[in-house]
Image (cartoon, rainbow, N blue to C red):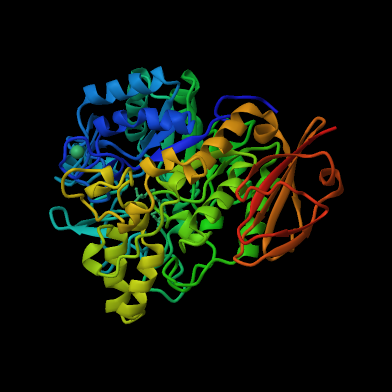
Length: 558
Ligand code: TEU
Ligand code: CA
């Protein structure tokens, strides 16, 4: 297998609004990130993916960009950004920019021009369609609820927005749009960034006939089959690769929700000149009910295990995996896949980290995950800030599909705001995130869960992550070893081996709050060395009774 730095990296995702506020206005900023670079260095990560920091009216916290060459004023200046790049590079840390080019903000100058008239030179930068029978051009619903089309009286036409109406979709069919995007990417590469995380890159090409989608009993039609992995997406990415990516030593990861194994190989296959890897979402989309993610049902462990194993096995030798359990759109991983009850919080956070970080692929740590930060469980609608949560609360309760009480429970478990509460740095007011009033409430458990305490405690979740990251740096087998699943049908245990030459590794994780019995595979029953354990186990007999959420990794060299 070809060795490259991005296969050997551990990425840390920063959500800048909630990471560290340096000037007391309650909003995280670039100076704040610079202050914490030493913390990240100590954790051991070597790549940062920072969610969008460009000029934006913040309808979707920066995923609505109004100027691709300007830093958002509340985050700082271009000079601050250049300092951040230099300071990160000094510490051996690379920076990925979040590239949001499926859509812009409606306040971007291109859209301001585009909506002015049908013959404006920027008209075709976006997707405009005539009304059909006085209504929307088709039945597509947007990802945040409502129709995906917005009527614009100025020219009596509709524009497409797969996300909020303040996020009009760019028209990638237009050569000029693609040229603008590549020029902008080159601009940032020249500035010295080290790669891109590409926002909903799988949606940039749309079926130009814009057919109605299936409603599956819901209010709107599904645009999926016509604009996810659309007809020209691979052609565009190959062009982007020629025009930009191939000219620099950059790392790329595409956000491709709904991607299948076959499709992932097209985006990120070793032999294709598109992206380095993609995010697949099957494991975080388990258990979608009639209303997608809005359900209180807990995930099914066996289903989860099956999906994780499938991606390990089927991409092996063909494309590279990205490994994650959380991000800024997902609930906190310990609350969702582990157990955030104080009795099990630390131990299950460590178990989840063990399971993920010993797999093949590039691991992504979402800010605060290295502390075992949990969901916030807001019980008042006023506390929520995210447009997705607020839009769906209205849409699903007003249409009588879900009761307000049930929807509040869904939000507690699934709202994106769970991941967006401020980083918990210490026990001071504002959790050390801000000296002012934070833009979103701090989780009150910052007194128990915070970086300052964990840095002092050698047994903390932080130090456990630090060790996992160090092991990956030191051992090729963790990066390149061949994956093999064990006990596939066990309903509590997730276990697998890795193999490289004469080296072998065994990872064992108990995903349940009950004890679990197992038998060690023969090779590991004698003379194996324990690389890491979340419970201090020292005896590894043939028969083992695992404690709730116990995890360990054994190593053997023949
Ligand atoms: O997310 C894409 C996406 O599909 C998400 O909307 C996802 O389905 C949803 O968050 C699950 O609840 C990306 C960004 O990660 C997200 O933050 C943006 O809101 C979105 O694109 C639009 O740019
Ligand atoms: Ca600030």
